[in-house]
Length: 475
Image (cartoon, rainbow, N blue to C red; front, side, top):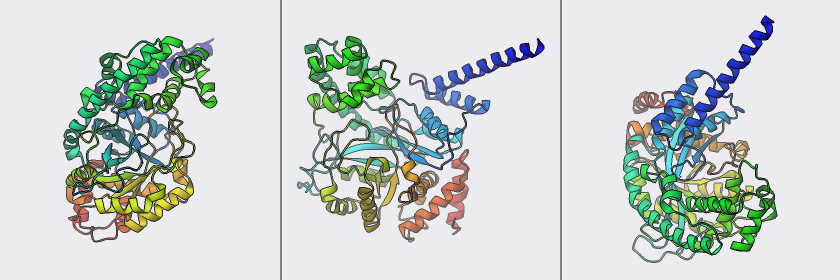
């Protein structure tokens, strides 16, 4: 009898602990809580000793995670926790037109004892050269599926003292995109009304569900998410929705996705529907951005260099079958990649960022060859923005890509050291190691990154900066 009583008490205690852990996680991923509340919940979870055991200990890293500050199921704190739970040793936020996630991401990574870094992603214009003349890329699809002459690039490894400067730099870009998204919402509402679907209230259905008021960005995905909500409300999940999309909007759902939308209990239902709309609805409402939103590439590079951040060209490559299901098969920069790499070198890019799961091995080996030829740092990361995506990138552990783990640690070291003193930025001409070949400099920074006290990275970096100044090399 006593045994049964003890067993019952243990069961109750276990149930209480599980409930507390769920509540912590719910708070950590609550987009409507303050950053401080999310960080406090993460700290409490960490102190409780009840963190999940990492799924593996592969040493993977991912510094291209989108958060709620652009579009994602994850707050910065939850993104860091998910990374840690999946066995990653480092995580970084990269949001569209926003650096709003930065401080929360860095705090969360330090609480969890994993490496952290921050940046943003923007679309820029390649249409004119520095003299204002049309460039050879003005009429080409570069790495942007929606526009000619516009390209995605990243600004990463942003030093802490420059985070606010980056936020100010992005304000006019965010404002222009907001205007365009409002205009696209008006077009979407015409189509939804004709289909017998409730119209989108921009303020209630998009703006208030975003983090725009906190420095976040509103993207096309926010608009499509609002449309997805209205469609589910009209047709419900399952066959009625699939039929309604076809008969009312002329959207034929591919068989592969149709099977997922037939299941109302599919935990990723919303994101699967959003992917369909991105492929077959967005093109009907899309308005091309102007050059106030997609500013000249030269301006972004100049800003990145002024704060000792690292500017990277985001390689896309010709697409056969889209891994995420939201891009059509298309040709991009592969046919003129030699010419493009010469141009991004001339413009002053520091790096090329790419995603091993998104391309063929032959494509990426060619990118690596060109990076060596032109002296670009290689940065890898997978842009997490929906619940189906894994935080793991096992491809990075293949022999052809293992060096990307080191370059990502070099990126983290760059950010931490440049936060202490801009001179220690990887590409600063005032860096005591600047005379070193890039591959040797990256090796030193990678070794430093692996030795950082990840629970106190800034304090640790301050001491390392002093030693580098004295000529101590971390080999």
